[in-house]
Length: 181
Image 1: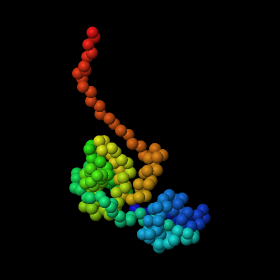
Image 2 (image 1 turned 90 degrees about the vertical axis):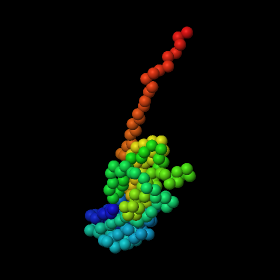
Image 3 (image 1 turned 90 degrees about the horizontal axis):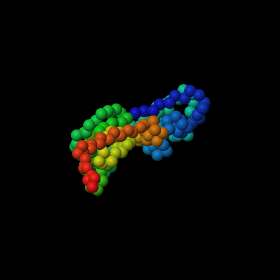
Image 4 (image 1 turned 60 degrees about the vertical axis):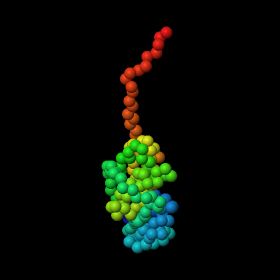
């Protein structure tokens, strides 16, 4: 996944200004992109305070090969509803936690997704966007890069990305009657 910006005016004078104002990339991710030479000016790696000219193309390649550390790949049936280069949406069943823990070191949704990523040669770290309790089933969005996770988290805070819950309630039709004595 790549972000591109063509300079059309003298509004910005450096690559850093475009990265901050047009791409809205966090400082942490900017550091990671710089380290991996993924920020380009006219298809060449550069430093962020490089002066720019009208017609220049600034690109950020967000495809950084990463792996989730400490997550043991575990084969499990995943109900994937949607997937593209940016994220994957799947249904989390009841009684499966999102993350591995002391009690569920190999039996979490993240373990299943890690297995899926490895099996399909997807060299991405698991970036959980929304969480559900262990006892709750529902949709979970997993971003395939840090930029998508950050932007979806911002959308959730601004309530553009909205979660809705549906509850199924069952009531026993035989009510106990009180003695009227």
